[in-house]
Length: 420
Ligand code: SF4
Image (cartoon, rainbow, N blue to C red; front, side):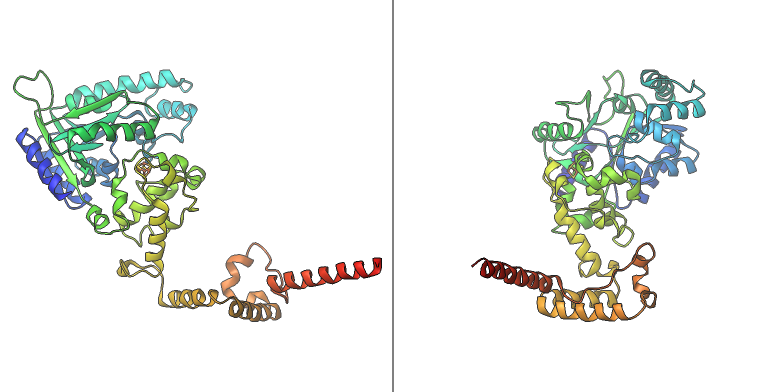
């Protein structure tokens, strides 16, 4: 990756662009806001970019008195609603057309009963004005082609192309894992991404940008800046088990396939990247202890792995992260379990390897729990607050099974004898 990033930097610079490497999300935000201030930028049009969500870029721009306007229709809706995206490729998928109509009525002053086509027309008119007046366009990038220094951008609304061509400054912000070796690889990656994201052969717009406007070009930006962001990706790259998560194309197919995501929705994950891949990358990008619950938000059914076009083994990574969180040493400083919890889990783990010993210990504990009132055991509160804890039976399941078979056999023998 380091080789291709250097090649990319060289080719973007040769084409007249400026490349900045940002170690953290804060560094990337600082670069963009400083650039905007120094160029007298008052408003910015943005095409959908998950990495700008990762940087909370809109917030940083607003602090500097710069107006950020999301131009992807879904992003525009969630921005008006003051929410965050619900899905990585369909940010407003949780909203019905009635809800969007009510939102437009409240924020823009349109009729409260508009249908989908009218709502789209309203957004189109609003955004057209913003495209014309904006000083800066900010985009993400689906791929960065190293051998030509080209940014590839996939959209279905054309807003990405407007952001890259209308304002006088274009800033593209990409994660460092978005680099691919050459133009000959781009076709394959586009097919993989688009088919898995929306089921199309090709999206309505695939835009490629190689630097700012040339002297003979009629339009295009005067300046092109490429901000390549690390923000924890090197840490993922250094981990042999998690490294493959950087293959992610952000197509969203694993979210659609995940039974947990489909039940709880994108906002429950608490950060930018929801769903199975979010449960892997969010703890790594934000800190393992901050995202400690996410690796457990999975049934490990494997649907995500089946749906993934680049076959990332997400269940394996989730199990690995669970292990690291409870007893791992790789991220020792961020382990969330205490010494007592780890000791209990080690002892229980060893005990469970021996069936007879486990049966004896469980039987002994069951007898104690049967003798004393349950309220004496505070660790049972989580269970007994809403339901009863039944009496523990004297026999284990295996003993009961053996006895019932023994009785059944004796009965059958008795029947046979009486018939004879
Ligand atoms: S992990 Fe795979 S399926 Fe999920 S978003 Fe990334 S590329 Fe798509």
